[in-house]
Figure 1 (spheres, rainbow, N blue to C red):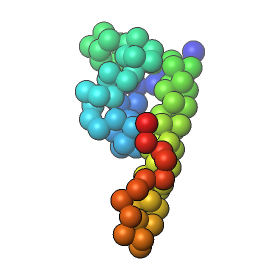
Figure 2 (tube, rainbow, N blue to C red):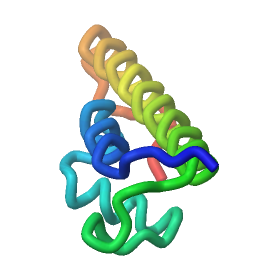
Figure 3 (cartoon, rainbow, N blue to C red):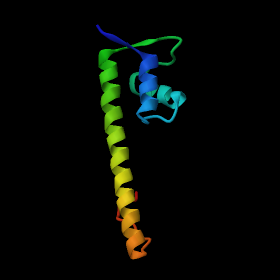
Length: 90
C-alpha cells in the first residue's frame, strides 16, 4: 500500500488555500480520516490522500466560484449604485 507524508499533505492544504494554516489543515485531516497528530502517524495511505485531495479540490473550486460571483455582484452593484445581492446569501 502506498503511503504519503502527512507533512507534505498539510503543506499542500495551506499552499492551495484549502486551510489557512497548518493547525487548521490538521483539524481538517483529523475530521476526514481521524489521524490525531503528526507525532502518532507521519504517513497516510494513498486512499486517505485521495479522499482529502478530492474534498480539497472541490472546496477550493467552490471558494473560487463564490469569489467570482461576489466580484460580479460587486461590479454590477457599483455600476447600478445598488447594494442588493444576487440571492446567494444563506
